[in-house]
Length: 203
Image (tube, rainbow, N blue to C red; front, side, top):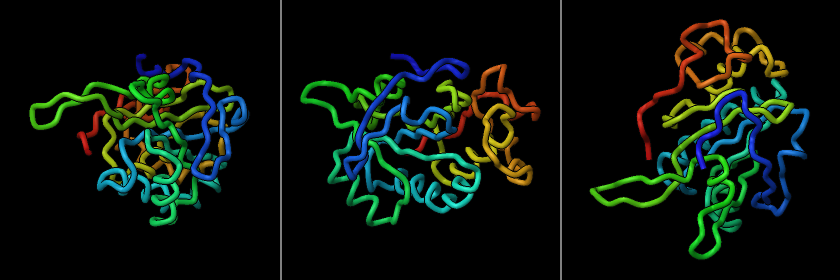
């Protein structure tokens, strides 16, 4: 599957988090939420990214924006990761069946061929989606750089007039430094914030 372009409807999904609570696109209707895909629990880049969202959690709650992480790890791994770093948001379980690709990662186009030390393998391309109250993709961040990512996503959301959230204008000051791929209908007023994110790759 290909990455979902902004302006398109997000794929329907339903997945449990580390505590067994099921989250779905239908259940999240009416709210703006962040769905961020990361390769693996408790690895360096993924920990930095998760802690970035943790540290910005109060701002996201104030803005009325939910955050959900997704990786191919199982519930036990997610539980350990969340407890170790005191993560306050759900981590969705996208554990693949034997010999199969993880369903949620595949549906959102982030299950891709990668390479390391000359070897090719399939894995999660670090990608973040912002999905609006109508279930459509408002913005997409590609090749995410973990450090400070949560602040950059929130700033981009603040610049989206149709995000239907309560992010203060002051939060948008840094939006130009974190361009996300956005649809024409939701393109922010700041020109540089309307191009696709091309941050450097991080593990």
